[in-house]
Image 1: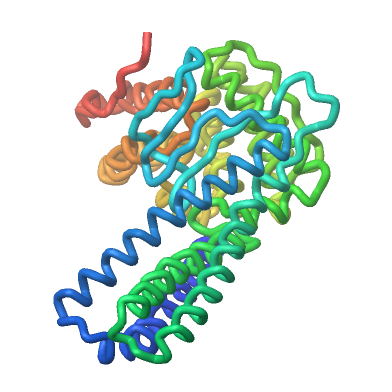
Image 2: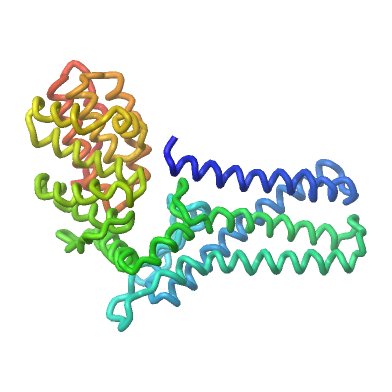
Length: 386
């Protein structure tokens, strides 16, 4: 199990453990004294939980929006539980969309022509601060209402007090998740706050936002600043340069940027390392003879890394693995296992990279199809935008 998976498991166990303790102590005591029938009580709790999820999701993104304004960013879109609002042609528009985060995502880019470099700290911090204020306010309201009803849990005010308490507990659980200073299954604000405490990461954070926005808006040959100090942020930014070169089929020119990331294995996450290694494997197999590629594969890709690449659901790992399994290991079953994950991986690929990933994936699959025409893999090719 990867480090990120273990961290995520610990966080979820912590959250669910808190929820179970709360349910079997506070809510159980309230249920036995509130005067509500079992069916009505469960409806009451489900309503409180739903309200808590919606309210706290809105509160979280409100914090991000205010923090973005304070930090001198332009807000591009706000996504709450899949409901995304954005501006196009100076008009506010809506659509359903995926998001990167636990309950939503506020996308931003640095404002242009500002005297001071935008500061990501308020953007990353205000959501957590809003949750903290909410939890304190809920506790005060809960105590105050219970003082008024003097322990009578059958009163309407007592029902309201516990309703507020459940909403606050939902906020507290999201707060626990969001303040974690390490990578879990999504990138939390706490993790990014630790990263941007490094001035180089802060610069890379802003550059990454700028480049991704430019690419997503169809700009070609976007100039990408690269960094020599490698962290997760700077590695991801340098990978934008790699993607730009791969898009132009300048494969060998991309190698130095890839090698600089791989050489910093101890300072980046395992996921970043594996996906970068997949880029190198892809280039090696696509640019060399099979004999040379096999030599690199046998020498430089240990079985532990092959296993991680095979299980990683990302376009970079999948296109590398279909070349590994199809051309080097010559395994139809392994190739098909990788191909069956393509649509899920593509769906979760950063939009600024989807077009080039689609092209690179099809190029890899065509190599395998040419080598094994009897495998009948043509149906796995994805349609490219014209």
